[in-house]
Length: 573
Image 1 (cartoon, rainbow, N blue to C red):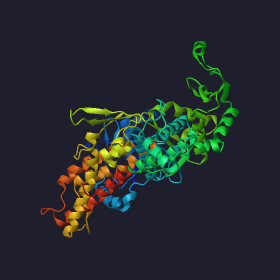
Image 2 (image 1 turned 30 degrees about the vertical axis):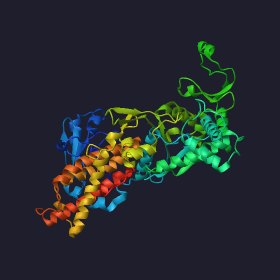
Image 3 (image 1 turned 180 degrees about the vertical axis):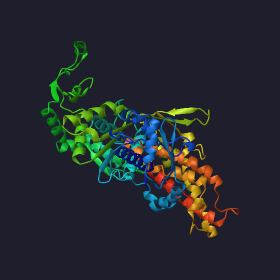
């Protein structure tokens, strides 16, 4: 199906070129043509303010430019009329006949509705979740998972060949602490008098894993190193994480093990390249340290520094500590070097808001390696606050968690309290830069105040019409779309915006746009459903057939939107 804003922009571009050829407009470089949906039906469907932007280049008043553009606009079957508004806006009105034809186009495209060609022939990778396997998935990581998976779905809808990747970080100090924590629990199960300290992980799941180890190994691991326990708990925890994510329709295509970057030498090759390019130096302190800062520093040994101040950073960053162990910076740069080498045209990283500095450092690392960082796009998402209603007091109570202390609300908890669809929608339906309060009581409501119910119920209502029609032996065979009225066309106008929404979400890396659109679409649909009856004695049979066909198209649109959000498409509620 056509992307109507883009098609409209092409018409305006053709008109400007024709006007220049005819001498009605002077020669100038034609800019990108902005086409935006109007806010009021009386102003048409799309507005183009380009005449205002051309006033200086053309040395003419905007309204005069708009009149010339209209004079040269070529015919298009989807435009019914256009007019000038205000000081030079050009308003476009979609053709009613064209809109009626879109019913068949929507049904024909079905599950592939508005699959675009933006990414045809290009590879995209979306890396998301990437949680250290030190505990189960909690709500904060889940938000990044939903954002990342939805972004991947939208990129696929835009034509990209997409890979979903989980960066499996199992090489850091936290994993050592986790292994040591399990060993303590193992020894406790064997009756030894040992205790966890405050630095250890306290989660009850470690007790369960310790019991499994005792059952399998008896006391054979009493003298084993922490790494044995780390490997055991890592496998168990990762299996849990994957199962939890699958429960909300998230599955990764590839799991990239951080350890592999050390095993194959990529980390040290990356460091050597950065040193050869003149971006790494060895010193106790970074070059720009003040005497006052130096006097307060406890550092006494040489470390390797990444000279990020060459890229405008406020200070240089430690890349390899004095003990020879890299900070997160070096393997992160090596990992992104590896991504580029794998040939991805677009690389999207979904990270917590506290990783803002880190992603800038990685981008500088790409530049220092002589690689192009423009293919890397980062979506930073803010934290999520969970609240429940205390059944005794009726007050909202915040649920706080700590993986280290073993206090957390897991993704499994959220799904049990609400539903997989509710979790996905409510974590998606805000700009990632916005802090979220996930109110369990509000999320589980089964009414139109809950957008999950509101959107899915639109799909359910369409299915209900088809069931009733089948029971009566009534079909849409031979439906005449010319019989559709203005109410139905209002919905179709909204439905044909889907392509523009997908395009905008992909180009801006803002997957929440599809959630906004889904709620708006349902808001247009429900009042129409209440008025536009199908199986009613007062509705003529030919009109009923046309309306039944219309609802088939509506169902296709809601199915597509819900699928892009990774949600189910129920037929009954």
